[in-house]
Image (tube, rainbow, N blue to C red):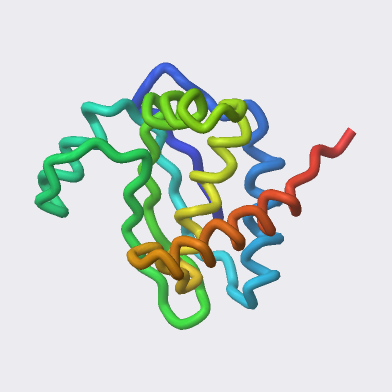
Length: 139
C-alpha cells in the first residue's frame, strides 16, 4: 500500500495515478508492493532528518529509509517540495516532471540501484527516464 503524507502546504493532485504508476514500476523490476509511505515536507523538515539520522548537514531533495524484505518493497520516502522546485528551475524542467523523477528515484534505490559513482548515476538516470516514460494519465 502506498500512502501520501504531508508536512507542508502541498498535496499531490493525482495520488491514485502515482500509486498505480509506482505499482507498474515495481512489477517491471520484479518486486512486490509492501508498505511505502511518501512524506512531503519542506527543506527545514528534511534537513533535520538528514542531521538526526544520517549526520549530514546538507539540504537534499529526498531521503529514503528502506525496510524491504526480500522482493517486497517497504519504506519511508521523504521529499522536500522546496528542493524539487529549485531543482526544476535549475534543470529547466517542469515541477511535475522533477517530482516524478524524485518519486521514482526512491523506489529505484529500493530496487537496488545506486548513485554514488558516475557509472551508477548514469544507470540511475537511465532507469529514471525509463520509468518516467511508463507514467500515463487516464482520461
